[in-house]
Image (cartoon, rainbow, N blue to C red; front, side, top):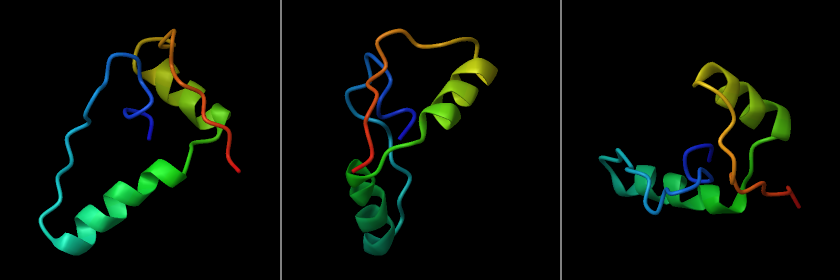
Length: 58
């Protein structure tokens, strides 16, 4: 989710080996990371990614 929402990412690479794994990975479109988690990942990876899509959980 963090990579998927980064600016410039059009297709994150999925490492699935089974149909069950790919099904689980594709269902992440319905989910979002809490803002605090996304900010923490930005922080440890070198700073915030301006333009990141912030998805609000339903």
